[in-house]
Image 1 (cartoon, protein in one colour):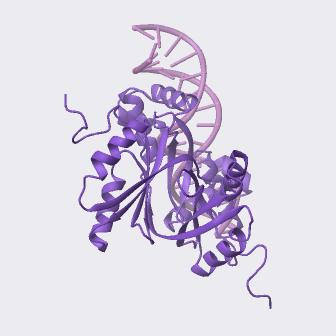
Image 2: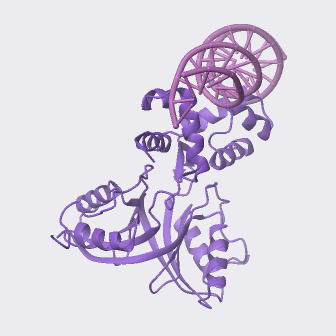
Image 3: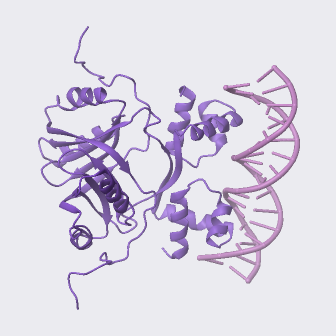
Amino acid sequence: MDAVDQAILRRLQRDGRQTNRELAEAVGIAPSTALERTRALRARGVITGVHAVADLEALGRGVQALISIRIRPQSREAIEAARDSLAALPETVGVFVVTGNEDVLVHIAVPSTAYLRDFVLDRLARRKEYVDVRTIVVYDHVAPAEQTELPADGSASGRTSRG
Amino acid sequence: MDAVDQAILRRLQRDGRQTNRELAEAVGIAPSTALERTRALRARGVITGVHAVADLEALGRGVQALISIRIRPQSREAIEAARDSLAALPETVGVFVVTGNEDVLVHIAVPSTAYLRDFVLDRLARRKEYVDVRTIVVYDHVAPAEQTELPADGSASGRTSRG
DNA sequence: ATTGAAATGGATCAGGG
DNA sequence: CCCTGATCCATTTCAAT
């Protein structure tokens, strides 16, 4: 990942549909080179895909929630099964498998609070393998499109050690 | 949003770089029509953008966490300022503004647990306006690319009322 | 690893159903 | 609102550096 790769990645995260020519000109290389670099980023698994993003409000899903769940039994199999089954629901935006008091956190977006209630009560709380189902309403969710490599050292201001 | 719009949205969420021709053939309309439909989806705000997605592991950021924070004062201004300031950090993958005991939940991805420690202690816990900073490690995070409209009624199996 | 040029194929628009 | 067909332009390949 040299500076050119980083610039390409940054620009494609911002706009995944810009033409290869624009991209090449913006980063100062020939179109054929830009194409090869971009392909290499894909081949190395740095770029996993290019996706259109839909606005959840525009889809009539203006109510968002995070639902924490403990899975029983607390085995790898049960937790992975829960993760996949929850991720497959059309209401689901994301699933986190986490440490702490809960095992998974499900981010969902639904049309209304009535829908939210039915979803939680009828589809989650009823399952014997999901216990301690707790709902947190999400007022707002922002997700920066640009994800970059990080400098090795995270402390921009003030380290633990001084020497 | 008729069936054609939904099919277009679904396919562009899966692959935002497929050609307009492929798209048109897949959904069974002419390329010019597909172009117009796609533009309309953008114009209506259903499609907000097309973005390349980077693999956090490949970026050397294999350690993820969710950090819950209470904001003080608990005013709109303070919470929105915190949200924007947290979203602007290069470590941040997403920020949730939530109900409950905490005000915001920050999803971050960093290179190591040492980095995580420094980030939490030096960059968050030091701020007087962030109180009750709690870290949950994320073992796994999945986010389905496809987000669709939902049927008006969420209870696929078993309703509260019967008649 | 990068480039320039040639050919293949897609985006786009006008005109008509 | 949708399609057909023509033009223009981007993508892609490849030989050479």
